[in-house]
Length: 103
Image (tube, rainbow, N blue to C red; front, side):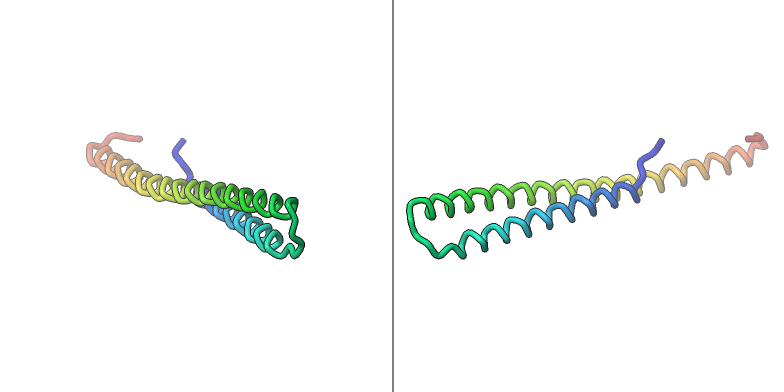
């Protein structure tokens, strides 16, 4: 069984969508934390924790995006290899036909 470039591209698309979803969540959290108008030790702590979480979420989103690029690259490489395999198979069939070998 050979790889399926179409399924790989679909997976890359899902990974990209997840990266975008996580980034959007990070942006919402950031806006929400910045919109806090009260000031206190607890407010400052909450904002620092939110900032840490936003940073972590963006790192995760970056990893998803990196995985999506890697899967997309693999899909392209797989498609090229499949083309080479199909050309080799066609050449082998032609050679065998030229020799009168039944398949």
